[in-house]
Image (tube, rainbow, N blue to C red; front, side):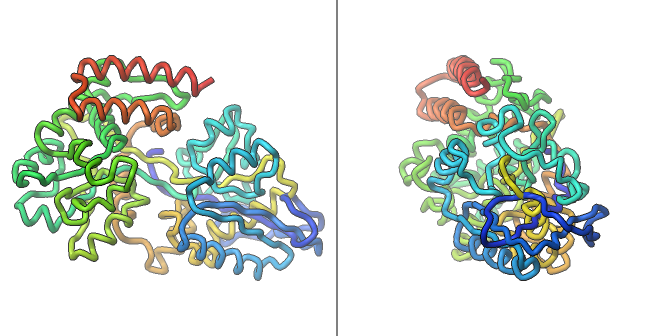
Length: 447
C-alpha cells in the first residue's frame, strides 16, 4: 500500500444468451495484449455466455460503466454483460445475502476491507492468480496486489487507490493571511490567524481519529494495527494520538464534534454539505483523495478554491503515516463457470484504452499502468485527486490494516473522540478505555 503504480489487465470473455456464469471456452486462440507482455485468451466459440456484473455508484458511474459494457459487447459479440447496479445504501446487505445464498454476480465490485468478512481464509472469491496472463497482473506492483491477497490467494484487482490528504480552502487561508501547512506546528500557528468561530480544518469523529493516528504513527514509527488485526499500539501510543487531538481542539485548529453536530454533521450529513464548510468557516479537510471532488465542486460554485496541502509532518518523523488503500476491488465469483471470460471483460474496462476512456475516473484514478497511460494521453489525469495520490506515493507510510475501517472499530473511535470533545473523559481516561475496547472488538472480528 505504499505506492500507486499500476493496475491489472482484466481479461473477461463471456459468451451470451443461454448460459450465465464465467468459464473458459473451447477452440480459443491466444492474442497479444498491446498493453502487456502477457498473452490474453480470446474465445472463438460460437456459444453465447451471459456474465452478471454488480456494482454500486452514482449516475455518472452507472452511465460510464454501461457505455463501457456496450463497447465491450461490440468487440466481443458472443459475450453479454448483465448489469446489476445500485446506489451505496443497501449494497453491502445485498452482497452479504447473495454470497451466503450462492446467488452473487459473476463479477463484483467490492470494498477492500470486506475481505475480512467474506474471505477470511482466502477462499471466498476466485483466486485471480490463476488468471495471471488473462488479467495482465504485470501491470500491478506487488505491494498493490498484496493488499488483496489472503492466504496467498489474490481475491480481487485493486481498481484504484485512495488515501487521506489534507486539503485546504486557499481562498479563506489567503483572506486571513494563513499559509499552506507543511508541519503540524504550521497548522497550529495558522489557527491563531482565524477569527473566533472559524477553523483551519474540520474533522468528524472518524476523521479525527485518523488524523490523530497519523500523527502518532509519525511519532512512534509503528502501525496502529497489524494486517491480521492485532493491536500494535500500546496504551501510551493511543494516549499520544488522543493528546494530539486534544491539542487540536484546545488550539482551535479543528472543530469540536458538537459544532459539527449542530449543523447536522457527524454522520447525519457529509462535511461537504455543512453550511460552515460551504461558507468557508470550516476551511480544510483531512479527506479521502477519491471523494475530494464532492467538496471542491460546491466550493468552486462559491468562488472558493480547494487546494492540496499534503500530509503535515511532525519534527523528526519516523514515517509519513500516509494512509493508502484500494478504493475498491473487482472480484470474480469463486463459483464462476467462465473465469477466463470474466477476466477478459475486466481486462477491457481496466486496461484496454477503449474501455478505460469510457470508464474515465468514475472509480478514481486507475491503478493500472495501461489505464494511466491511456488517460494521460487523453488529458484526463489531473486535479485534486491526482495531486493527492502523488503526495501519498512520494511519501509512503506504514501498512493500513483492513480491520481499521471495520464498523465496530469505528464505533470505538467515534465514542472515544466524542467523549474527549464533549469533555466527558480526560485523555488518560480515554486512552485506557479505548485500549480496552479495541482489544475487545478485535477479539470478536478476527475470529
